[in-house]
Amino acid sequence: MPIVSISITSELLKKIDEFVRERGYSSRSEAIRDAVRDSLSEYDLGRFKKGKVAATITVISEHERHDVDERLTRLRHEHDDIVSANMHIHIGHEYCLEIFITEGELKQVLNFIGRIRAMRGIEQVKYTMTPLIENRFKE
Image (cartoon, rainbow, N blue to C red):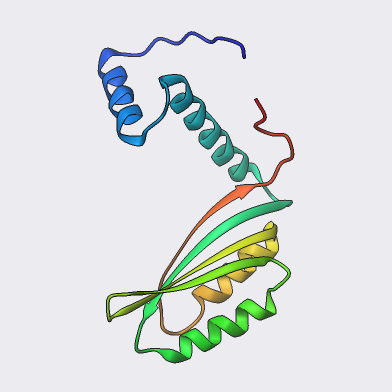
């Protein structure tokens, strides 16, 4: 692996060392490589217009709204081509949390997210998306 030298302030170095300790990285280099991969992925996603992506979609709804569960299940089955997994969890007695793992064309995944957001009874929808560019981050 090539060695790259960078200059940073002592304040930033202290924060990096704290980050490495708290997150359990084996070294500063590994933490910085991870941060660079994350930044490049965000950069790629910002320029991304089409292509394959992987996404994790987190949905929160009120526990009392059983109709939401049924509608989410129907929607999940309509999108079996992109939804590879999902999990339903109760958060206390008030909320349900649904997690969807998807892989597919950007347009399809965004359509799926949009349909979830449009559902009555949904409190929040958050997602993380990563472009699937083959061999992009091999070391």
